[in-house]
Image (tube, rainbow, N blue to C red; front, side, top):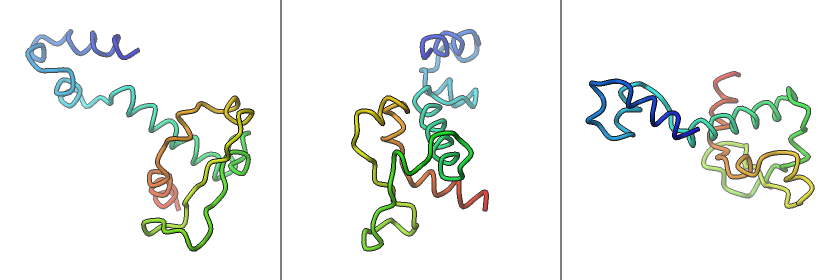
Length: 108
């Protein structure tokens, strides 16, 4: 997928002299990694609101109150189970909860 986007950005003659990251910036596109992270955060948001079929409690628990959370109350602790990892992509576990807090705050 990344190769397709890489080739697409080279189709623009005026951008060919730029490196890949600069071409993405000019075209206002995200890298594949950024899109995956965004999709993971959206899925976490849906889980936190009960919009998806996978409940948040199946994969995460909220950290105890005494754990520092950089100013928000959504410190998630991942559940460590191989069976759970088969339900959701492993990249979801590595996503930042800061982004989730921002999504929740904006929609409230």
